[in-house]
Length: 407
Image 1: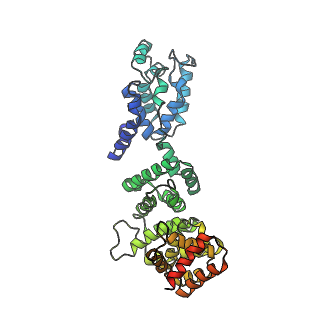
Image 2: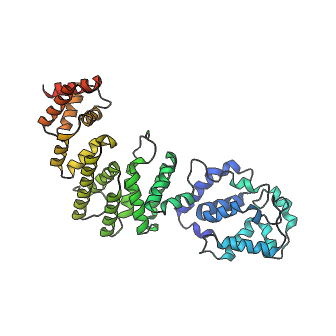
Image 3: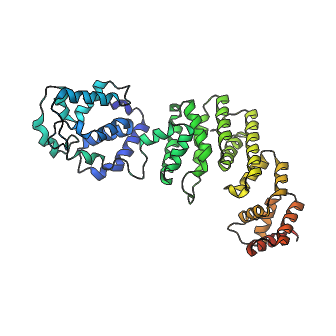
């Protein structure tokens, strides 16, 4: 029943990795063959695995150490088992195969399905620490899913759900499992992207555009947005161009995460416009790229009209995207009306982790000149200084900028 699950190296590696996580912790307390078979179920047929875990008393029929003694009516037990098996999602596996497999793991069930009475072997099963014995059964599930791992069942439930549900499920995972999830998804898509149909790709892409920069912990140094971008590209690069465009457009339009929209789209669209584009790209038409840029710039403009710049994780990067996507005039108009507090925030970002020396401030001023003309910059600095409404530290910072700008 399980031999067809080991159809490629990836499946073999997945099985071995799962086995390696827990086997050393229980190797002296289990019968190896039973444990290997049970772990294969956990990886490839998780619903069957959980069925076994939840039906101890049913499967340990007539075992003398079972906590709840069961009826000796074989037909009643056989009917219960058949109903339970039919409720499993194992439609591609004949019930006879499932019953035969269960008799291997639980030889005591032979008394249900055959006329074999093997109760004389009970003491041997107990000595060998078989799964079919009441005092050993629980040991096999003791370390079922380590706290640092995400089960295949949970992974599948997340990745095959609709966008809103997928977002909710991923964000409720602890940061370490978010990283595990995104890394595993990246690996699967790189090796077996064909297992996802169009609706899956739409849901995954939409989810990535909503939570891309929220993966992991705030203190993480590694930018997981790189993996998120790779996931989207590998999902869509083999699709029909028009369908890929519609999925991207839908994801960008529905997402309210402006930082992620700009980070992902900047990478994906920029690679298309290089003289020698990368090999792994989504082959969009120029008209597609132009339309996506227009949608993004409108989202930036609408966000900044009704929200504060400080609500963004990367405000300077957002301004750069706005400008680079062909809206330099609108950016300059926005910078003319930017509040003093937002302006101070921007210059603080520009000199973060740098000293207030002439070189650092001059570099920051040169950067600001990309978004505002010199006269607007001078007026902004003068207005802040003359207002005297800000903390001493902020006023000293602005005065330093003003001094170097006018030298």
